Length: 638
Ligand code: BF8
Ligand code: SF4
Image 1 (cartoon, protein in one colour):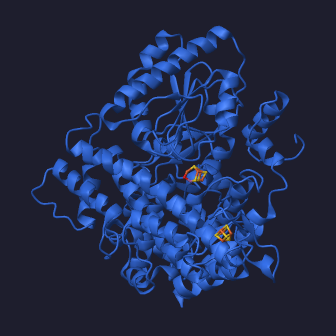
Image 2 (tube, rainbow, N blue to C red; image 1 turned 135 degrees about the vertical axis):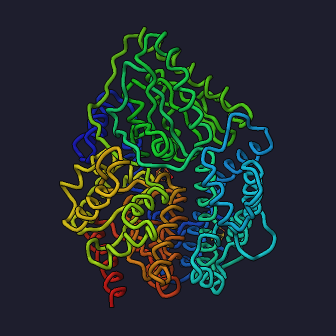
Image 3 (cartoon, rainbow, N blue to C red; image 1 turned 180 degrees about the vertical axis):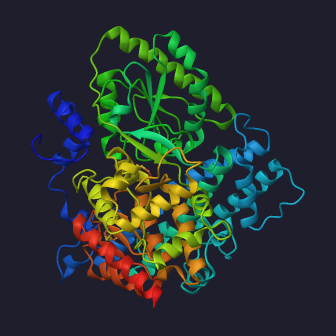
């Protein structure tokens, strides 16, 4: 498959050729081996919910048009879709729960390696969720915030989750109450989806989808908790310079890759690496080079400037450079296929979470009471492996591609930029720029990689087209790693791709802030990991409040050009339930039911004000996004 262009990332392309020449099997080969993929599964009309099945919808009429129990296409598609949402909500929220536990244990003196790094954010979150802050120490407040978050996981009454309600605008609260989609508690909504999709429970596709919306809003609750508590424990991100792509791997250093999602251990590795730099030098290394993959990479980039090695789909290609000594993983988006590639190069694969192990890898059990000890163990293992690598004299293949980037745009950091122009009402800088026609609107870039498309090309094509049309872009997750790696997260990209209005807006922001910024501002504003989509939700809520309208009237759109994970399904669903049109560029398994298809692409718009735009052609998708955002801006102005 060497001749088929599978990516527009030059570093990944070089490594793909290298892996093919050296018979190293990666996701790109496995994708080819899976073709053609099962059409029933692809369309969402394969049901495996009970083991009378699997059942497949084989036609439009007769017994074959239903599963054995009589479930029709629309029931099967809807059930499968909302089970994906429950999977996504579980992943995001359990990530949040880990953080709440660390905060709680810290407040009880049982997690001595952790501290409150952002006391202002702690107070701000406490106030927002309705806690009294006067006369309380930070530790007391931390405990109360942790208890309020725990309550959101297991509340038995139905007033709605605190961390969600505290961040919604009034009109959205009313909308969710009227449509019975306000989540009661995170765990409860996940359980309810599993229950209602059990054999012989909910067969009504619309009822099922509404249940999925409620579960997805529980997902948003978990994301908000994750972001807020990460900021309290590790600091709220501020603009920071770094680099991205495989060229950040330095063969003369001890290379440690941080991969997965949760910052509880990775932040500890970052802090400890600084302290153990001398040990690495004593072993003959030029130092310790950390780099990130997936959202753990985004977390440590945002707060520490740790460079990005690559994104989800190219994780095995990073190991195939042969220069990685340890790859530390926590949870989510970690390919089991990493293990085989690690074996080829004596790279140590280190798992850290009890629920996420890979056969044949090392396990350093993460417990918050001894986090530092685990981090030290991991770094010393990397130093030892570096020595073995040097002694072996084995050649490495590190593509010499990397790009400069500026990241670190938390919601607070964005407001801070705006405040330099309008200190009394920072968000008005953004809302006015749209009303004045300087920028067209805002687009959230989100989501994964999916080899249904040419790896990263949809991301970069859409970004360039939106930039040309003066759309201000914020984003999270792997799409931002594509932007960073391919040079679309720095000022050079503003000069090359931004339309005149967008360039003027970005320049204006920079001029007002230049004393405190490390460089000129980028084309795309990196807001963090996928749980940090909550920051984007905070942004459009602030805009809606400033305009005095509900979210569906805000000139804001979203795109996941290469959506793939269950988490992306949950995010996409709460995005449209927020009233935002959301493009997805890899086809989700919905095509087997015209009814479900029209619910998510049309009817959702009538109920919530947002809908999915399912479009695989990036150019067409970009035009649809631009039209949607322009239409909203036009409506707002009249
Ligand atoms: O949570 S974008 S491939 S890494 S799921 Fe996974 Fe998708 Fe990447 Fe981050 Ni988000
Ligand atoms: Fe078949 Fe119904 Fe069982 Fe699904 S739940 S596998 S459609 S019998």
